[in-house]
Picture 1 (tube, one colour):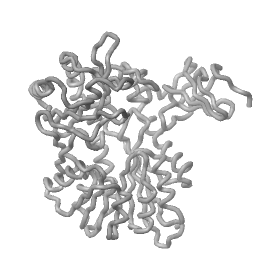
Picture 2 (cartoon, helix red, strand yellow):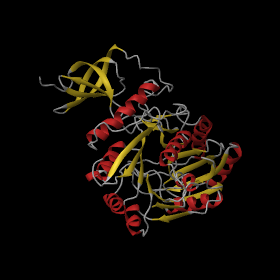
Picture 3 (tube, helix red, strand yellow):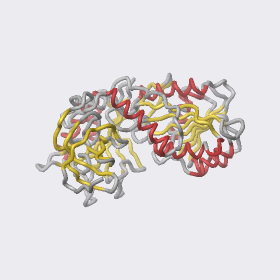
Picture 4 (cartoon, rainbow, N blue to C red):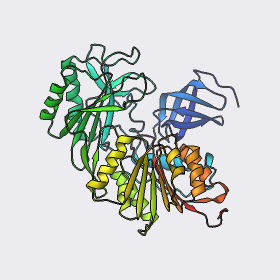
Length: 458
């Protein structure tokens, strides 16, 4: 195995895709990651960052293009960091996500031949996002821009439309930038921590068509914002509310803790799994409504609830999964750290005539050990970092018969499943990946665990 040098040109064939979206090839038994490539591409690569066993390369020349390579739907797909895979046909995207789940469970979780089902495909790989949040910036000529950052940089790629978001949001994206420009509002500069408007967020009810607009700002007093908000409400009939979210911290977090309704109502209505939900602009709701419903149907089928169960929904949000499941159990207890989400969950329960739910504010690692109940089913849907170790230990003590673990990051899922299944206490029955994020390398996963009767490997 010869030494390799930065700047060296090598010839490789791309064989797979990484969980960050890069193509993966091998050269002299070492791994090379190359962005914007597709399995089946034969290419010349310039090595740009070298480690002992792997390197990152830059595509220099195609020798042979992959049969899985397609023309992107977006004219700035090669620059914009919002998507990684618009140049890869959809079937191959699904295959890569399936491989990603298996590899993480084997490598991190230590599971041999994990029971991973084919990825639940999205109804459409485009036009699906019900929420978008764009950083704002200025062009070199001083025009207001909104878009996503270029891959690996903080250079903003300006967008007037996006093929991944719900197309009903496109007119607002283009028009609101122009109105911000006319108002002369100062665009926030993160380097100097100066300026007023930081981000533009849009959310739509896929079934109702109702739209919420949220401006994330560095201060509350934006000159003329009430007048402009009313103009937007009058000009865009689907718009039901304009919000102002305050985030004055020097942080990468987008939303601050304080949101004001400037005009209209502070929520939109959405139909989900036979329920009517109220959803605010700053609370969590899955970005692909239809695929989330499809995964919920798998969860309902796999659990085969009989009506007498106690179900704990940890990290419950606004009750997206808990409320549809409440119809099939005796009692639902939801735990959620965000107080406003709990308020929405309680409202949504009452609004839909569901009276067997209780939602509590606090961290799961604090609330779960304090609960003096024996749950039959625990539903976990934590943030990307996964579950706190205290949550895992509490579950191993309380021993619910079934655990459903929904995750948007398979690496932390695999880590936590390994702990739950330690000593054979739980058996991993099934893994159902679902494509909530077409055109990206992200994959949602539902893992189904059952309590072992023997407490040993079965």
